[in-house]
Image 1 (cartoon, rainbow, N blue to C red):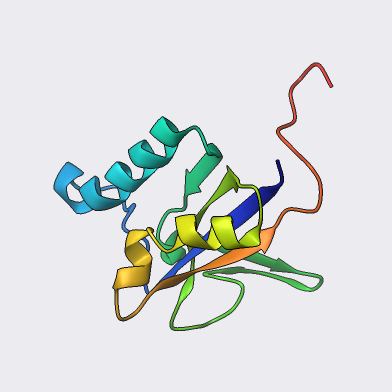
Image 2 (cartoon, rainbow, N blue to C red; image 1 turned 180 degrees about the horizontal axis):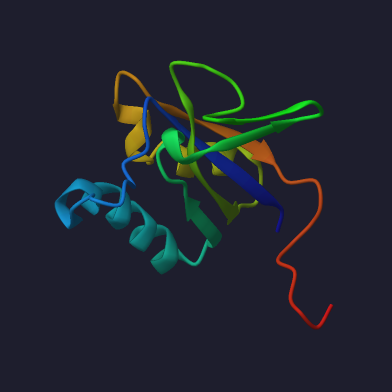
Length: 118
């Protein structure tokens, strides 16, 4: 079954160091639902953009690579039979229901988790 990356866009990440369990509950429940379904193979929540370091050929700067109202706050990879099924799963993401966020669904071309034995 093909893999699809779901990139979560938001105006800021909920995963600040001081985030409470209640701040994260809706997103954590969505992740638990995907785990229970067996479709999610990995997930990463990113910290707020202030913790980013951007590198270019001639500079290193604090902050995100691109200044934008929304940025990638996290991503996960699911297995789905086709793009339509992946979109149906992505529509369940809490970011889709906000006025300032959303998700992007992209088929995964190649890659995978790298282990030390490889």
